[in-house]
Figure 1: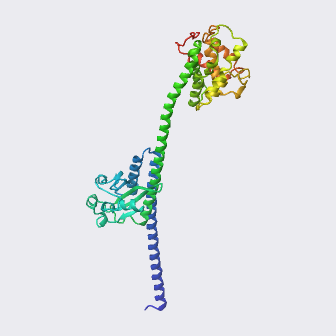
Figure 2: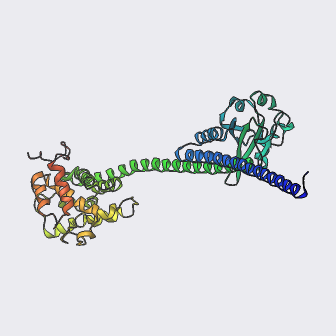
Figure 3: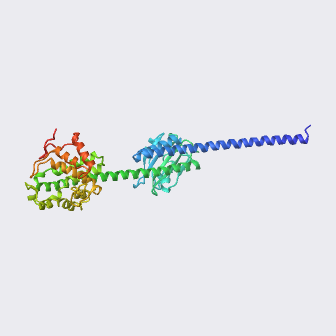
Length: 429
C-alpha cells in the first residue's frame, strides 16, 4: 500500500525527471539553432570574403561577376548562380553576363525580360522592375515561372531567387540563385543574399570607377605622347633658329641636352625631372637670336660692350619661353644657366641653393660641351681640359655633386658626345 507521502514523493520525482527532460530538449534545440546560425554566418563570411578578394585582384567586370557566381555556388552550396543585366532595348531584355554551377547553358538558352510582360513575370524581371528580392519557392508549381519551368526542372532546380543589383541608385540587373531545396530561401537566407547582392553592387561600381580611371589615364598618356612629339618638334625648331645664326655652335644645344640628361640620371633624379633637364638644355641658348650675328661669329675676343650684349641671351631666352606652359621650369633654368654657386654668374648673381638644380646641371654640361668645340676665337681645349675645369671650380662656380657626376660619366666611359658632332675632338686616352 502506497502512503500519501510516498505518492507525493513519486510525483515529485516524475515532475523532476520530466522537467529535466524538457530542459534537455530545450538545450538540444538551442544547440541545433546555434549550429544552424553558425553555419549561415560561416557561409556568409566565405561568400563575402571570396567576393572581396575577387574585387581586389580582378581588373575587369565580367571576370569579377564570374568569380562572384562561383563563390556563391561553392561557398553557399547552391546549384547555380548567374548575373543578368537589364538591356535598354525595345524588349527590355535581360542579358546574362556571368554564371557558375550546374546547367549554366540554361542561362544562355532562356529568354527573359524586365518589362511587365509574360517573360518579365519571373523572379529576375520582378527584381529588376521593383528593386526588391523576388522568390519562386517551388518552380514546379509557380505560375510565374512557366516559360522556363520545363528546362529548369530537368536540371533539378526547385527554387529560385533574384536580387536587384543597384549601382548609384540605378537598378542595372539582378543576381539569380537556384537551389534544389524548396525551403532554401527563408527570410534569413533572403537577408543574407540581399547583403551579398549589395556588396556585389559596390564591387561593380568600384571596378567601373577603376576602369574609367585607367581609361582616363590612358587618354592622358596618349595625349601626352602626342604633346611630346609636338613639343619635341617645337624645341628642335627653336634650336635650329639659334644655330642657323651661329654655325660655330651647330648641334651645341642638342649635345648640352644629351649631357645634361645623362648627369641628371647619374644624380638619381626622377625620370620627369631628367626629361625637363634635357628639354631645357636643348633650348638654353635660344636667346642668342637677339645677339647680333657679327658678335656671335667674331674671330677674336669680345670687347666688354660686346660681351654685355651676349650676356643678355639668358634673359632673352627666358622672355621667349616663360609663356609656354612646360611641365618643368624650363624658362627659369634657361634664365639661370650662367649663374654660379659663388654668385659670380649672371644675370641675377644668384648663389648656392637659390639656383635651380636644373640650371646647375646645364651650367656644367654647357661648359664641358663648349670646351669640346672650336670657337671662332679659339680652338677647342678638349674633354680632359673641360673636366679639369669643372673639377677645379667645383664648389665655387659649379655644384660639386653635378661636377662629380659629370666627371664619373666620362672617366668610366658611360657617356661621350656623338662621334660625328662637328668640332668635337676625340677623347684623350
